[in-house]
Each structure stands twice: as C-alpha cells, then as structure tokens.
Length: 440
Image (cartoon, rainbow, N blue to C red; front, side):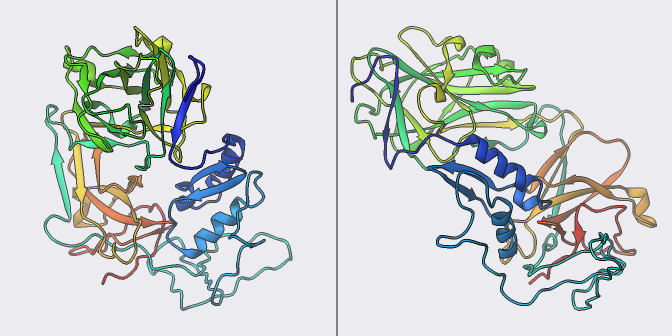
C-alpha cells in the first residue's frame, strides 16, 4: 500500500473504526461516576460510529439497567437494547424495606420485614432509607483454614511477587507502520499506582503479528525504555535507560514474547514515581516498502500510545501521539515487574470468598485494628475500601501490634468478617452496608 513518506497507515483485520467521540465518552463516564454505585464506576465507555458502548460487568440485572438509564440521552449513541426506546421493566415485585438499623448490623435489617416509608408533605425528602431492588446474592466471607489470610513482612531487599501491567484487551485488531524510507518506533506509557511504587521493570512483553508478510522471525528490533519521574505523559520529557542488550530479534509470531531487561545501572529500571515507557524501534524498516510491525488493539484507548519515524535516531523528542496519524489505539506491549516494598512493609494475601463461584466479581475491604482490643471491644476499621479485585495488598510499615481482617465487597454491599472467638467482630465503621450472602 502506497502512502506519503511521513504518514501513518494501517493494515486492519476488521472494519475500520470512525473517529472517537471523547466528549460523549467523558459525559457518560461522569454520569456513571456520579451514580453512587461503585460497580458502575468500573465500567468502560467507548463511543464509535455514533454508538455509545458500555463494557465490563456488574453484579446484578438491576445495576445493568441503572447503568443504561444513567447514560440515556448522551449524544453519541443509544443506551437501550436493540429495538428498544426505554429500559425494560424489572421482573418481579418491588422489594424495599427500611428501619432503624440500615447502616449498622446489630441487629441487621431483615428484607422480610418491610416497613412503610412515611412522608408528611408531598415533595419533601426522606433520608436514612435503604432500598433493595431485585438484588442478587451478596458478598460472602473468606474461606476458612490456616491460609485464609497470610501476613508477610518485607526486609527491604525482597521484591513482591511479579505482576504484569496490561493496557490492551488481548485481542489483535490491526498493525501499523510508516511507509517510505522511515523506520517505525512505537512506545506505550505505563503509570504504576501508588501501591505499586517503587516498581522494578523486569521485562517487556510484546505481540508480534504476521498480518504484514514482511514481518518474519529473525527481524532485528531495538528495545526502548524511558523513565519520566514527573509523569508528564510526554516521552520527550523522559530519560532513556541505557540497556546492556538493547538489540534483539523477533523469535515468534502471533503470540506474546518476553524480553528480559538489564541496564548498565540496575537502579535505572526502578521507577520511584511518575510514568515509564516501553517500546521498540524497527531496525529493518528503512526499505522503500511499507512494513507494518506495531500490533494494536482498537477497542482500548487512553492516549498511552506514541510513535516515531526516523532512519537514524530514537530520541524521545521525535515521538508523537499516534492520534497525530490515525485514530487512537493501544499497542500490544505489556510490562512485567514487581513492587519493591520498603523494609517493614507488610503484605496481606488471601483466598477467594466462600461463594466466589456463585457470586463473581467481588472486591475486598481491608480492616486494621490493635491486638490489645481483641480482649474487649475490637477497634478495627477500614484502611482500604477496595483492592481493585486483587487478593493481596502491600501496606506501609505500621507501629504497634496490629491485626487485619478482610471482607468481600459487591456493589454497595459488604460481606462478613467472620466470627470472633469470644466477642463479636464489630468494626468502628464499614465501607459499605454489611449484608453478607450465604456460603455454600
């Protein structure tokens, strides 16, 4: 395919997408964020070809309908099922109850005991009322056993278990490259969360595709690693890491390949703050033909993908957002690495909730208390209301003797913390309304 020497082109494996509609997506995300439901805040919005698409999962049919109603009327697409003009009616009778103990659990509300809502004057607000509409079963509790919760203390030298930072959705949609005599370089931006910092970059994982027949096993590429402690979002402000073995070859096609990273100064691969960038430079892409080497996911966008074209240099200042050439996309590049906890840091890890198979999608709340309180009124309270669905978390060093409890979370509901050996486990506060489901 011929094109001007400085323009980007792509080889697609499906119908081209139209230009993104960020204003509609941002409005939809704002509505979901303001819905009051944590499960809705985790949904992903995308506007393409005039259609607003929501993706992700929610724990109940009711919350799905709430999400559709929240984005109704957003310019850029419909928010109802195909052929519909309004949200379908919820099945079954209405279920609601209220009482004196909605937000506590001693005793908890009983859904079977329905109480009327009293309004003295039409149009006035009635507060402190919980409403339960066609809810699915609630979150459970952690399974029993000696390894239900494991506590580890770090020595300052040992990394946490290795993890993978993923930006793409795992599906190859297209490939990209520059035509003419310009080789392609492409970068992805990674932004570790505060809990993941400092983050040691161990390897880069990349998908090589043969959608372009010119891309073959043995082709030479150069690894690129840049670190931007200020997190500016521009590789032009980042510092390249001097790698000991930057030049590599493609070893397999249509699969992810890992390349271990080593630097002249190992500390250069430890990210203390901000962002880091991983990418490649196509060393053999300077022939007159168009070589489309950068594999991309079109369904996930977020401004993390940048490109450069040159015959001799990979200087950060030469990179531009991929949207300067084509629609936004995410390179199929991933980062492998590990958190380096400070000495005295504490890692908590646990198993899945007892009803995880029947009630998927449960997050976790982490509680901390003083061991001295175990002999009387326990003083534990939440320190994390959600771990991003991870069954582990690393905490900063703490003073004194502490204990921890884990409670599953599902939408606006919280599961059980287990039973105490002598006194009930009554926290000072909770993340959500405590309403556990049954364990099988």
